[in-house]
Amino acid sequence: MDKQKASAIVKPMGAGRTLVTGAGGFIGGHLVGYLQEAGADSIVAVDVKPLDDWYQIHDDVEAMVLDLQGLDACRKAVAGCRTVYNLAADMGGMGFIENNKALCMLSSLINTHLLLASRDAGAERYFFASSACVYNATKQEDPANHGLKEEDAYPALPEDGYGWEKLFSERMCRHFDEDFGLVCRVARYHNVYGPHGTWDGGREKAPAALCRKIIEAKLSGSNEVEIWGDGEQTRSFTYIDDCLYGTTAIMDSNVDVPINLGSDEMVSINQLVDIIEGIAGVRVQRSYDLDAPKGVRGRSSDNTMIDRELGWSPSITLHDGLEKTYAWIYDQIVAKAPSPA
Image 1 (cartoon, rainbow, N blue to C red):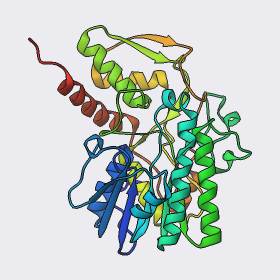
Image 2: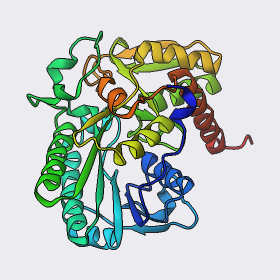
Image 3: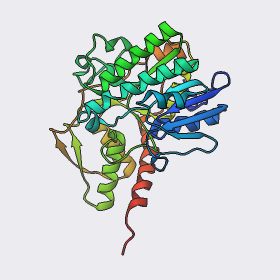
Image 4: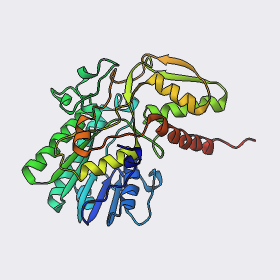
């Protein structure tokens, strides 16, 4: 499939009010803009963060600040909505999820209450943003990972905390579909990255964290960067434009089981640094913190199912996505830098 298809706009199914939760965050903020461009009739954007802390604010969208862990807040958010995209969760990169397992698990309240509210409000379609963290850890012990298939989530041994929350919430979606007729669609995101995301503060993921570290090393002249682990752990990273197209395509599809939404371009963390160095035009001195959170040894997406079901899979290269991400983070760092005396 050609690259242009990856950023094409999927038209929303039918008419009606659309709810996007987690709209103040990275993917949710982009999704609101994407749905607007696609011609969605009316969009409600909800997040727990104060509006001043939202990553993106869009005109002609009803923005609400609500804590969706509560059922009453979910009922208020979903009132009158035909379509629900649930991207709300308390999460971050590996440093956050390994040290905040209870907070991650509490996100199950959001999905549970939002499913109840959606059912009771007569919503017709419901999307849940799951994660590759649901996959059995024993399938991810080799850096030369051949790609995780959807069936590799069972027997269950997901990432503790965050992965269990996502796997449990997948099952809730399945049973609300089966028992109550609320059409549910579930995508397992694989390391989504891009502009307008978290790049500092402890919740950032590897692409943004390493872009920030290399930019700071370059600007300071230190040329030193710390890497968590030995750098040989592998991942695939999905650019936001592919994520948006895939999310809406899955929502509008007949795929009624959880499905991978991720790139199959797997790299080691050292290779990721190599790419960012090339973009930055600098070589850095690498040090390795072997005691830092580093997650599983190897993870990538097997895209057999999404290729078969949608005739499409993510295709934006890591280099192309990182160029845009690096440029955006560079601008944020320069804008925050104090003016010279």
